[in-house]
Every structure is written in C-alpha cells, then in structure tokens.
Length: 95
Image (tube, rainbow, N blue to C red; front, side, top):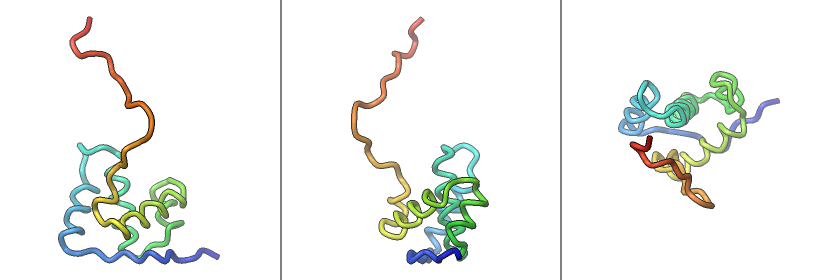
C-alpha cells in the first residue's frame, strides 16, 4: 500500500507562478522543468509514486525533490555544488 509523504507542499501565489513558468518552458534545462513539475504535482496532492509514474522517473527521485523543496523552498530546487574537479571544456574557437 503506497504511503503518503510527510512533506505536504503548499505553494504561495508567487511560488506557484514561478514553478508554472519553469514547468512550461521549452528553453530551460530539462532538470529544472522536471523538478518544477514534480513540485507542482506534489502541491496538487499527488503521491510520490503517482508523480514518478507520470514523469517516468523513480519514486526516490521525486521524494528527494519534494523534501528539498519543503525544507528550502525554491532555492532547494537548484543544483548543489559537487565534489571533485570541475568539468573542463576545450577552449572555444580552437580549430
């Protein structure tokens, strides 16, 4: 039996507007769009397993982003700095 998340999402009007804008964007990175969609669906009362099925991802991923949004609001949806050496790219204009 699926359980409900203890992190109940309620959005302010401003948060809802920002998330709607991001979720409908065609130009923003995919990860931003999906995270916004996850939070919007959570705010509608959907369970993590339902959101995961709808967005074709793992329930644990939905759970992670629901919790981060609950604790940190919009700032929690951004990527955190990663450990290790930053990626390097060849200099532009080479060739």
